[in-house]
Length: 141
Image 1 (tube, rainbow, N blue to C red):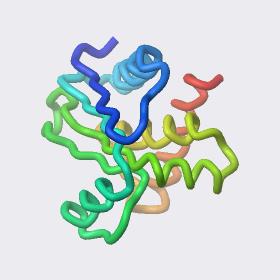
Image 2: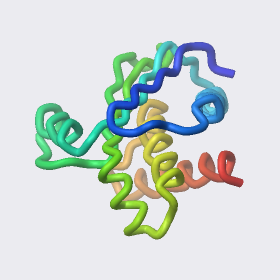
Image 3: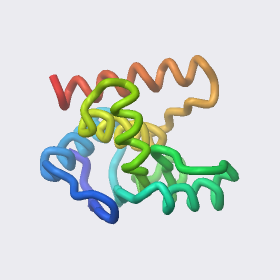
Image 4: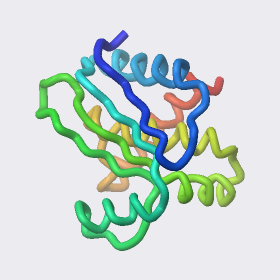
């Protein structure tokens, strides 16, 4: 299991099964042969994530997930994953999946960015989606 601290900040919504999610995240980090220093997962409303999106990424409006990486390559993972729960809820409905499953998908998406995955190209996006699906299957069966 990856050493380090995984914290949750529930600004917009309460999170269920935190112990299970911590174990899943730690297992994912360890499977990718990384160490963990610190990871914050912050659940926010659309207004807050929209502000972050505009301020740091120059994108207008809310999004489902934004990842901030504080470590450099080769160092233990240190970052924050901000999740826009209102957008996650709308996407869950759009994709006909449960809120929890969509929430877990964006959590792992943010984590995969910290593990070096990129979705800037179609090949990278395909590889990232496949990794998301593998990670979700280990959690949801």
